[in-house]
Image (cartoon, rainbow, N blue to C red; front, side, top):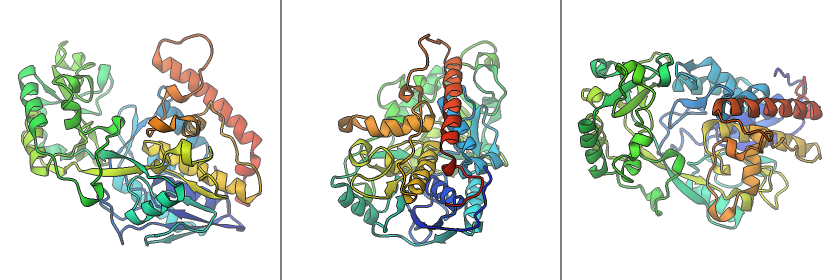
Length: 453
Protein backbone atom coordinates (compact mmCIF):
# COMPACT_ATOMS: atom_id res chain seq x y z
CA UNK A 1 0.00 0.00 0.00
CA UNK A 2 1.67 3.19 -1.18
CA UNK A 3 0.79 6.50 0.42
CA UNK A 4 2.22 9.96 0.40
CA UNK A 5 1.95 12.57 3.13
CA UNK A 6 1.41 16.00 1.57
CA UNK A 7 0.05 17.49 4.77
CA UNK A 8 -0.43 16.68 8.44
CA UNK A 9 -3.39 17.35 10.69
CA UNK A 10 -2.86 15.85 14.13
CA UNK A 11 -0.20 14.52 16.44
CA UNK A 12 -0.09 11.15 18.19
CA UNK A 13 2.40 9.92 20.78
CA UNK A 14 3.57 6.31 20.57
CA UNK A 15 5.46 4.91 23.56
CA UNK A 16 7.72 1.95 22.80
CA UNK A 17 9.74 1.15 19.69
CA UNK A 18 9.16 -2.59 19.44
CA UNK A 19 7.25 -4.27 16.65
CA UNK A 20 3.86 -2.92 17.73
CA UNK A 21 5.09 0.63 18.37
CA UNK A 22 7.08 0.80 15.15
CA UNK A 23 4.11 -0.50 13.16
CA UNK A 24 1.71 1.94 14.83
CA UNK A 25 4.01 4.91 14.23
CA UNK A 26 4.49 3.94 10.58
CA UNK A 27 0.78 3.52 9.86
CA UNK A 28 -0.06 6.85 11.49
CA UNK A 29 2.74 8.64 9.65
CA UNK A 30 1.56 7.26 6.30
CA UNK A 31 -1.86 8.74 7.02
CA UNK A 32 -0.44 12.20 7.61
CA UNK A 33 -0.10 12.24 11.40
CA UNK A 34 2.85 13.75 13.18
CA UNK A 35 4.17 11.00 15.43
CA UNK A 36 6.40 11.26 18.47
CA UNK A 37 7.87 7.78 18.99
CA UNK A 38 9.51 7.26 22.38
CA UNK A 39 12.01 4.43 22.91
CA UNK A 40 13.99 4.24 26.16
CA UNK A 41 16.84 2.15 24.75
CA UNK A 42 19.81 2.64 24.77
CA UNK A 43 19.43 5.17 27.60
CA UNK A 44 17.77 2.43 29.63
CA UNK A 45 18.14 -1.19 28.57
CA UNK A 46 15.96 -4.21 29.38
CA UNK A 47 17.17 -7.57 30.73
CA UNK A 48 16.57 -9.21 27.32
CA UNK A 49 17.52 -6.66 24.64
CA UNK A 50 21.08 -6.54 23.31
CA UNK A 51 20.98 -3.56 20.94
CA UNK A 52 19.36 -0.16 20.65
CA UNK A 53 17.64 -0.94 17.33
CA UNK A 54 13.89 -0.57 17.07
CA UNK A 55 11.91 -3.80 16.66
CA UNK A 56 14.68 -6.00 18.04
CA UNK A 57 13.59 -9.63 18.23
CA UNK A 58 14.67 -11.06 21.58
CA UNK A 59 13.32 -14.64 21.64
CA UNK A 60 13.58 -16.23 18.20
CA UNK A 61 14.17 -15.15 14.66
CA UNK A 62 11.13 -17.11 13.51
CA UNK A 63 7.93 -15.19 12.90
CA UNK A 64 5.94 -18.40 12.45
CA UNK A 65 4.27 -20.08 9.50
CA UNK A 66 4.38 -18.20 6.22
CA UNK A 67 1.64 -20.01 4.29
CA UNK A 68 -2.11 -19.79 4.63
CA UNK A 69 -2.11 -23.46 5.59
CA UNK A 70 -1.43 -22.18 9.13
CA UNK A 71 -3.24 -19.56 11.26
CA UNK A 72 0.03 -17.61 11.49
CA UNK A 73 0.17 -17.52 7.70
CA UNK A 74 -3.37 -16.14 7.53
CA UNK A 75 -2.37 -13.30 9.84
CA UNK A 76 0.70 -12.52 7.73
CA UNK A 77 -1.41 -12.44 4.55
CA UNK A 78 -3.70 -9.88 6.18
CA UNK A 79 -0.81 -7.74 7.38
CA UNK A 80 0.75 -7.76 3.92
CA UNK A 81 -2.55 -6.68 2.40
CA UNK A 82 -2.75 -3.73 4.79
CA UNK A 83 0.80 -2.54 4.08
CA UNK A 84 2.56 -3.65 7.26
CA UNK A 85 6.03 -2.16 7.75
CA UNK A 86 7.10 -5.15 9.83
CA UNK A 87 6.09 -7.61 7.11
CA UNK A 88 7.88 -5.55 4.46
CA UNK A 89 11.12 -5.58 6.45
CA UNK A 90 10.75 -9.26 7.35
CA UNK A 91 10.36 -10.26 3.70
CA UNK A 92 13.44 -8.23 2.80
CA UNK A 93 15.65 -9.85 5.47
CA UNK A 94 14.34 -13.42 5.56
CA UNK A 95 16.57 -16.47 5.95
CA UNK A 96 15.77 -20.13 5.10
CA UNK A 97 13.39 -21.78 7.58
CA UNK A 98 11.21 -24.22 5.66
CA UNK A 99 7.60 -23.06 5.66
CA UNK A 100 8.26 -20.48 8.38
CA UNK A 101 9.22 -16.83 8.00
CA UNK A 102 12.53 -16.30 9.78
CA UNK A 103 14.76 -13.24 9.52
CA UNK A 104 18.29 -12.08 10.07
CA UNK A 105 17.49 -10.35 13.33
CA UNK A 106 20.10 -7.58 13.13
CA UNK A 107 19.36 -6.68 9.50
CA UNK A 108 15.64 -6.78 10.20
CA UNK A 109 15.80 -4.42 13.19
CA UNK A 110 18.23 -2.11 11.42
CA UNK A 111 15.93 -1.86 8.40
CA UNK A 112 12.89 -1.05 10.55
CA UNK A 113 14.82 1.70 12.31
CA UNK A 114 16.16 3.15 9.06
CA UNK A 115 12.66 3.42 7.63
CA UNK A 116 11.26 4.97 10.80
CA UNK A 117 14.09 7.52 10.97
CA UNK A 118 13.68 8.41 7.29
CA UNK A 119 9.96 9.25 7.52
CA UNK A 120 9.40 12.98 7.73
CA UNK A 121 6.34 12.60 9.95
CA UNK A 122 8.06 10.60 12.70
CA UNK A 123 10.21 12.08 15.45
CA UNK A 124 12.17 9.34 17.24
CA UNK A 125 12.88 10.33 20.85
CA UNK A 126 15.44 8.23 22.73
CA UNK A 127 14.37 8.60 26.34
CA UNK A 128 12.16 6.90 28.89
CA UNK A 129 8.69 8.33 29.22
CA UNK A 130 7.79 8.00 32.89
CA UNK A 131 4.15 9.04 32.84
CA UNK A 132 1.11 8.44 30.70
CA UNK A 133 1.27 10.88 27.74
CA UNK A 134 -1.49 13.25 26.75
CA UNK A 135 -4.05 11.74 24.42
CA UNK A 136 -4.18 10.68 21.66
CA UNK A 137 -1.49 8.12 22.40
CA UNK A 138 -0.64 4.45 21.97
CA UNK A 139 1.20 2.60 24.73
CA UNK A 140 3.34 -0.12 23.14
CA UNK A 141 6.01 -0.58 25.79
CA UNK A 142 5.83 -4.33 25.47
CA UNK A 143 6.19 -7.17 27.92
CA UNK A 144 9.36 -5.61 29.36
CA UNK A 145 7.69 -2.35 30.35
CA UNK A 146 9.88 -0.37 32.74
CA UNK A 147 8.96 -0.40 36.42
CA UNK A 148 8.05 3.30 36.31
CA UNK A 149 5.67 2.99 33.37
CA UNK A 150 4.25 -0.27 34.73
CA UNK A 151 3.35 1.52 37.95
CA UNK A 152 1.64 4.29 35.96
CA UNK A 153 -0.31 1.76 33.93
CA UNK A 154 -1.31 -0.10 37.09
CA UNK A 155 -2.73 3.16 38.47
CA UNK A 156 -4.57 3.71 35.21
CA UNK A 157 -6.17 0.27 35.10
CA UNK A 158 -7.11 0.31 38.77
CA UNK A 159 -5.72 -3.16 39.30
CA UNK A 160 -2.39 -4.95 39.28
CA UNK A 161 -0.83 -6.14 36.06
CA UNK A 162 -0.90 -9.82 35.38
CA UNK A 163 2.43 -11.33 34.46
CA UNK A 164 4.14 -14.39 33.08
CA UNK A 165 7.73 -15.43 32.58
CA UNK A 166 9.23 -15.83 29.12
CA UNK A 167 12.59 -17.31 28.19
CA UNK A 168 15.11 -16.98 25.35
CA UNK A 169 16.78 -19.95 23.60
CA UNK A 170 20.57 -20.20 23.20
CA UNK A 171 22.33 -19.80 19.85
CA UNK A 172 25.28 -21.91 18.64
CA UNK A 173 27.91 -21.34 15.97
CA UNK A 174 26.99 -23.74 13.18
CA UNK A 175 30.62 -24.47 12.31
CA UNK A 176 31.03 -26.11 15.73
CA UNK A 177 28.09 -28.53 15.27
CA UNK A 178 29.29 -32.10 14.64
CA UNK A 179 27.52 -32.87 11.36
CA UNK A 180 28.64 -36.51 11.53
CA UNK A 181 26.09 -36.79 14.34
CA UNK A 182 23.46 -34.51 12.76
CA UNK A 183 21.59 -34.19 9.48
CA UNK A 184 19.75 -31.52 7.51
CA UNK A 185 16.05 -32.09 6.88
CA UNK A 186 12.62 -30.72 7.52
CA UNK A 187 9.94 -33.00 8.87
CA UNK A 188 8.24 -35.49 6.56
CA UNK A 189 10.76 -35.37 3.75
CA UNK A 190 10.65 -31.65 2.96
CA UNK A 191 13.83 -29.84 1.89
CA UNK A 192 16.35 -29.47 4.69
CA UNK A 193 16.55 -26.02 6.28
CA UNK A 194 16.86 -27.39 9.83
CA UNK A 195 19.86 -29.13 11.37
CA UNK A 196 18.61 -32.13 13.34
CA UNK A 197 20.52 -33.63 16.24
CA UNK A 198 19.22 -37.14 17.04
CA UNK A 199 19.68 -39.03 20.30
CA UNK A 200 19.22 -42.69 21.12
CA UNK A 201 17.36 -43.75 24.24
CA UNK A 202 20.45 -43.95 26.45
CA UNK A 203 21.71 -40.54 25.31
CA UNK A 204 18.30 -38.96 25.82
CA UNK A 205 17.87 -40.31 29.35
CA UNK A 206 21.32 -39.03 30.33
CA UNK A 207 20.43 -35.61 28.88
CA UNK A 208 17.02 -35.54 30.58
CA UNK A 209 18.44 -36.42 34.00
CA UNK A 210 21.06 -33.67 33.69
CA UNK A 211 18.46 -31.16 32.55
CA UNK A 212 15.98 -31.71 35.39
CA UNK A 213 18.75 -31.59 38.00
CA UNK A 214 20.58 -28.56 36.58
CA UNK A 215 20.80 -25.31 38.54
CA UNK A 216 18.65 -22.41 37.36
CA UNK A 217 19.67 -18.75 37.44
CA UNK A 218 18.43 -16.61 40.35
CA UNK A 219 15.70 -14.09 39.59
CA UNK A 220 16.51 -10.41 39.42
CA UNK A 221 14.92 -7.86 41.71
CA UNK A 222 12.42 -6.94 39.00
CA UNK A 223 11.33 -10.59 38.90
CA UNK A 224 10.70 -10.98 42.62
CA UNK A 225 7.08 -12.09 42.31
CA UNK A 226 5.99 -15.71 42.19
CA UNK A 227 6.84 -17.31 38.86
CA UNK A 228 4.02 -17.87 36.40
CA UNK A 229 5.01 -19.34 33.06
CA UNK A 230 3.15 -18.85 29.77
CA UNK A 231 2.32 -22.29 28.38
CA UNK A 232 3.24 -21.29 24.83
CA UNK A 233 6.88 -20.54 25.68
CA UNK A 234 7.87 -22.77 28.60
CA UNK A 235 11.53 -23.13 29.59
CA UNK A 236 12.82 -26.49 28.39
CA UNK A 237 13.70 -27.50 31.94
CA UNK A 238 10.12 -26.84 33.06
CA UNK A 239 8.77 -29.09 30.29
CA UNK A 240 11.30 -31.78 31.21
CA UNK A 241 10.31 -31.54 34.86
CA UNK A 242 6.78 -32.69 34.00
CA UNK A 243 7.97 -36.18 33.12
CA UNK A 244 10.78 -38.13 31.48
CA UNK A 245 9.00 -38.41 28.14
CA UNK A 246 7.32 -35.00 28.02
CA UNK A 247 10.00 -33.51 25.74
CA UNK A 248 9.43 -36.36 23.29
CA UNK A 249 5.96 -34.97 22.63
CA UNK A 250 7.22 -31.38 22.50
CA UNK A 251 10.42 -29.79 21.12
CA UNK A 252 12.29 -33.13 20.88
CA UNK A 253 9.56 -35.10 19.14
CA UNK A 254 11.23 -37.51 16.71
CA UNK A 255 8.46 -37.97 14.14
CA UNK A 256 8.87 -37.16 10.46
CA UNK A 257 12.56 -38.04 10.03
CA UNK A 258 12.35 -41.67 8.93
CA UNK A 259 13.43 -40.80 5.38
CA UNK A 260 16.62 -39.17 6.63
CA UNK A 261 17.35 -41.98 9.11
CA UNK A 262 17.21 -45.01 6.85
CA UNK A 263 13.57 -45.72 7.56
CA UNK A 264 13.97 -45.71 11.34
CA UNK A 265 12.56 -43.19 13.77
CA UNK A 266 15.16 -41.74 16.17
CA UNK A 267 14.36 -41.75 19.88
CA UNK A 268 14.62 -37.95 20.20
CA UNK A 269 15.58 -35.08 17.88
CA UNK A 270 16.83 -31.61 18.80
CA UNK A 271 16.36 -29.12 15.96
CA UNK A 272 18.54 -26.12 15.13
CA UNK A 273 17.13 -23.25 13.05
CA UNK A 274 19.08 -20.61 11.11
CA UNK A 275 19.33 -17.33 13.00
CA UNK A 276 21.21 -14.97 10.66
CA UNK A 277 21.38 -14.35 6.92
CA UNK A 278 24.88 -15.75 6.58
CA UNK A 279 23.79 -19.04 8.12
CA UNK A 280 26.61 -19.01 10.68
CA UNK A 281 24.34 -18.95 13.74
CA UNK A 282 21.54 -21.38 14.61
CA UNK A 283 19.21 -21.30 17.59
CA UNK A 284 18.17 -24.42 19.48
CA UNK A 285 14.46 -24.73 18.72
CA UNK A 286 12.23 -24.86 21.79
CA UNK A 287 15.15 -24.53 24.22
CA UNK A 288 14.07 -21.37 26.00
CA UNK A 289 15.77 -21.68 29.34
CA UNK A 290 16.58 -20.16 32.71
CA UNK A 291 19.54 -22.44 33.48
CA UNK A 292 22.73 -20.84 34.70
CA UNK A 293 25.06 -20.16 31.80
CA UNK A 294 27.65 -22.73 32.86
CA UNK A 295 24.90 -25.30 33.30
CA UNK A 296 23.62 -24.62 29.79
CA UNK A 297 26.95 -25.56 28.28
CA UNK A 298 27.28 -28.65 30.48
CA UNK A 299 23.78 -29.96 29.83
CA UNK A 300 23.27 -29.01 26.18
CA UNK A 301 26.64 -30.47 25.20
CA UNK A 302 25.28 -33.85 26.24
CA UNK A 303 23.46 -33.72 22.90
CA UNK A 304 25.93 -35.70 20.74
CA UNK A 305 26.05 -33.21 17.83
CA UNK A 306 26.62 -30.31 20.24
CA UNK A 307 29.45 -31.77 22.35
CA UNK A 308 31.94 -29.28 20.93
CA UNK A 309 29.45 -26.51 20.21
CA UNK A 310 30.34 -22.88 20.83
CA UNK A 311 27.49 -20.78 22.19
CA UNK A 312 27.13 -17.36 20.55
CA UNK A 313 24.41 -16.47 23.06
CA UNK A 314 23.19 -18.18 26.18
CA UNK A 315 19.53 -18.46 27.06
CA UNK A 316 18.07 -15.93 29.48
CA UNK A 317 14.74 -15.46 31.22
CA UNK A 318 12.83 -12.24 31.67
CA UNK A 319 9.52 -11.08 33.08
CA UNK A 320 6.69 -10.22 30.72
CA UNK A 321 3.75 -8.01 31.66
CA UNK A 322 0.28 -7.75 30.16
CA UNK A 323 -3.06 -6.22 31.08
CA UNK A 324 -6.23 -8.20 31.67
CA UNK A 325 -7.73 -7.04 28.37
CA UNK A 326 -11.38 -8.08 28.91
CA UNK A 327 -11.44 -6.01 32.10
CA UNK A 328 -9.44 -2.91 31.24
CA UNK A 329 -9.90 -2.47 27.46
CA UNK A 330 -13.06 -1.56 25.56
CA UNK A 331 -12.77 -3.94 22.60
CA UNK A 332 -10.75 -1.64 20.36
CA UNK A 333 -7.51 -1.60 22.38
CA UNK A 334 -8.59 1.56 24.23
CA UNK A 335 -8.46 1.86 28.00
CA UNK A 336 -11.94 1.98 29.45
CA UNK A 337 -12.95 5.51 30.44
CA UNK A 338 -10.34 7.18 28.22
CA UNK A 339 -11.06 9.06 25.01
CA UNK A 340 -8.01 8.17 22.95
CA UNK A 341 -5.49 6.16 24.97
CA UNK A 342 -4.69 2.81 23.37
CA UNK A 343 -2.41 -0.11 24.12
CA UNK A 344 -0.74 -2.39 21.57
CA UNK A 345 1.69 -5.27 21.50
CA UNK A 346 2.17 -8.11 23.94
CA UNK A 347 1.21 -5.92 26.89
CA UNK A 348 -2.30 -5.81 25.40
CA UNK A 349 -2.73 -9.55 25.94
CA UNK A 350 -1.61 -11.12 22.68
CA UNK A 351 1.34 -13.46 22.37
CA UNK A 352 3.73 -13.51 19.43
CA UNK A 353 5.64 -11.14 17.19
CA UNK A 354 3.09 -10.91 14.40
CA UNK A 355 0.17 -10.73 16.81
CA UNK A 356 1.89 -7.75 18.44
CA UNK A 357 2.43 -6.20 15.03
CA UNK A 358 -1.26 -6.67 14.23
CA UNK A 359 -2.36 -4.82 17.37
CA UNK A 360 0.01 -1.97 16.53
CA UNK A 361 -1.56 -1.62 13.10
CA UNK A 362 -5.08 -1.88 14.52
CA UNK A 363 -4.41 0.68 17.27
CA UNK A 364 -3.17 3.13 14.65
CA UNK A 365 -6.38 2.75 12.64
CA UNK A 366 -8.49 3.13 15.78
CA UNK A 367 -6.62 6.34 16.69
CA UNK A 368 -6.97 7.63 13.14
CA UNK A 369 -10.72 7.10 13.14
CA UNK A 370 -11.09 8.72 16.59
CA UNK A 371 -9.45 11.94 15.43
CA UNK A 372 -12.03 12.11 12.65
CA UNK A 373 -14.80 11.97 15.25
CA UNK A 374 -15.99 8.64 13.92
CA UNK A 375 -16.75 5.29 15.51
CA UNK A 376 -13.90 2.80 15.76
CA UNK A 377 -13.82 0.39 12.81
CA UNK A 378 -14.87 -3.20 13.48
CA UNK A 379 -12.44 -5.71 12.03
CA UNK A 380 -14.40 -8.71 10.78
CA UNK A 381 -14.32 -11.59 13.24
CA UNK A 382 -13.60 -13.87 10.27
CA UNK A 383 -10.14 -12.29 9.93
CA UNK A 384 -7.16 -13.24 12.05
CA UNK A 385 -6.85 -9.67 13.34
CA UNK A 386 -10.54 -9.48 14.11
CA UNK A 387 -10.41 -12.83 15.91
CA UNK A 388 -7.56 -11.64 18.12
CA UNK A 389 -9.39 -8.43 18.99
CA UNK A 390 -12.55 -10.37 19.72
CA UNK A 391 -10.63 -12.70 22.04
CA UNK A 392 -9.25 -9.74 24.00
CA UNK A 393 -12.80 -8.45 24.38
CA UNK A 394 -14.62 -11.67 25.23
CA UNK A 395 -12.13 -13.87 27.11
CA UNK A 396 -12.94 -14.82 30.70
CA UNK A 397 -11.16 -12.28 32.93
CA UNK A 398 -10.54 -14.72 35.77
CA UNK A 399 -8.47 -17.08 33.64
CA UNK A 400 -7.17 -14.65 30.99
CA UNK A 401 -3.85 -15.58 29.35
CA UNK A 402 -2.02 -14.11 26.33
CA UNK A 403 -3.20 -15.63 23.07
CA UNK A 404 -1.55 -16.53 19.77
CA UNK A 405 -3.55 -16.56 16.57
CA UNK A 406 -5.13 -20.01 16.16
CA UNK A 407 -8.20 -21.54 14.56
CA UNK A 408 -9.85 -21.89 17.95
CA UNK A 409 -10.49 -18.15 18.18
CA UNK A 410 -11.95 -17.86 14.65
CA UNK A 411 -15.71 -18.27 14.16
CA UNK A 412 -16.51 -21.70 12.73
CA UNK A 413 -16.14 -21.91 8.97
CA UNK A 414 -19.01 -23.73 7.30
CA UNK A 415 -21.03 -26.69 8.52
CA UNK A 416 -18.98 -29.47 6.94
CA UNK A 417 -16.03 -30.61 9.04
CA UNK A 418 -12.72 -30.65 7.17
CA UNK A 419 -10.44 -33.22 8.76
CA UNK A 420 -7.11 -32.23 7.22
CA UNK A 421 -5.75 -29.23 9.12
CA UNK A 422 -4.00 -27.61 6.14
CA UNK A 423 -7.20 -27.74 4.09
CA UNK A 424 -9.17 -26.38 7.03
CA UNK A 425 -6.74 -23.46 7.34
CA UNK A 426 -7.03 -22.76 3.62
CA UNK A 427 -10.82 -22.52 3.97
CA UNK A 428 -10.45 -20.12 6.89
CA UNK A 429 -7.86 -18.14 4.93
CA UNK A 430 -10.12 -17.74 1.89
CA UNK A 431 -12.94 -16.49 4.09
CA UNK A 432 -10.58 -14.18 6.01
CA UNK A 433 -9.15 -12.50 2.92
CA UNK A 434 -12.60 -12.02 1.42
CA UNK A 435 -13.79 -10.43 4.68
CA UNK A 436 -10.70 -8.20 4.82
CA UNK A 437 -11.18 -7.01 1.24
CA UNK A 438 -14.78 -6.08 2.05
CA UNK A 439 -13.62 -4.27 5.21
CA UNK A 440 -11.07 -2.24 3.24
CA UNK A 441 -13.65 -1.37 0.58
CA UNK A 442 -16.15 -0.25 3.24
CA UNK A 443 -13.57 1.93 5.04
CA UNK A 444 -11.88 3.89 2.23
CA UNK A 445 -10.92 6.75 4.57
CA UNK A 446 -8.72 4.31 6.53
CA UNK A 447 -6.92 3.14 3.40
CA UNK A 448 -6.49 6.28 1.30
CA UNK A 449 -4.38 6.46 -1.79
CA UNK A 450 -2.80 9.53 -0.26
CA UNK A 451 -2.02 9.83 3.42
CA UNK A 452 -4.28 12.79 4.16
CA UNK A 453 -6.34 12.87 7.34
